Length: 93
Image (cartoon, rainbow, N blue to C red):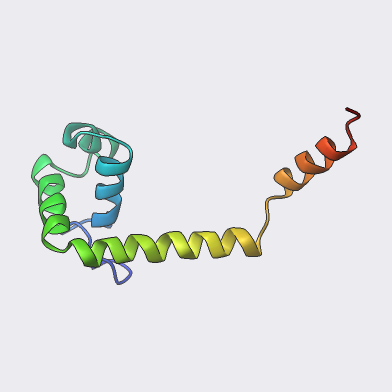
């Protein structure tokens, strides 16, 4: 466990990170190992196996993380986005 989340044994890499790299970014296990060289192929496959055995748990962790990130974005709006919006409003058509 790492911060209350399932992680790869002996590492601070969370199972949900491995899942995100694999499922959402389309990385192969070999690419994940290249991305995090301290992991082995066995570690990556074990993390993915854990995910498929604990699907609801990991998906709930991912939903909670997305909700937290959205909350942080709402509470701390991007100054750059605000400036760009303002420039667009001031720009003559």
